[in-house]
Length: 292
Picture 1: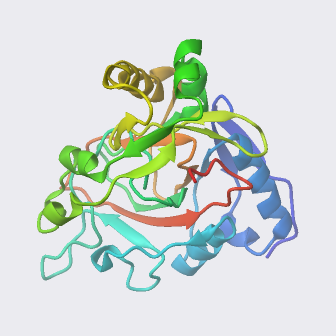
Picture 2: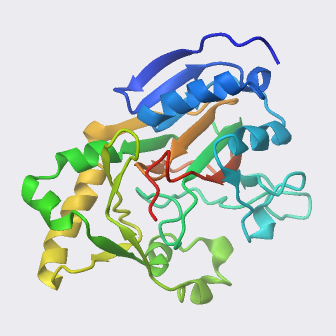
């Protein structure tokens, strides 16, 4: 580990997305470095680190500095070396099996990860090892800004209310071929409930938590009110003025907070190699917008 030195940061989209110029592998185990990063992340929920070279054990160690990594139940997409890491890939083994999962060229539209779970893990890192030349750009949308864009009457209507989130809605939009044998069972996943407005415990900023792929209704509103309000929330959540578009390069590490962002990916070519390594980790409610 090198002696602690100041980090250089550069805004990519107002204060919402920030590029951090640092070699992560050289600063692991440096408490001052992690404190600095947490300070940046508090105001910039999307952080981009370019030109990284990380072993999987380093990727896991870095993720665990912000929250405990989870191990997903789908064994077919796990790294064979670290179970906390999953692979997104277009690559195949010699026997034809895909390396990891989610190899399809299409992607679900604007969404926040795990909104269909009762207790979501909202921290996420995506590390680009192999990147297709064409397509595959990733977009993030600022959900603090989405809340601010709502009219006063809509804010008053949703403030303090709970949303009903349904996994079957996302399956109907996504329905990946690799899940074809599980779709009927997954569609039975029970609905879950989260606040539709989250508040950061330290900054006090409010973020819209209205995933258009899972949110089906807001509790306490009439059917007519839901029909009027939900499209307004979904429109605000993906407003172009709130979006940072990232052209991924090999070695990019992208880190984001699902409690105050949404994301999506462009269609990509399946005949070009792609390998992305992903960790998901549980953020602390005293430090982040956590939908509990």
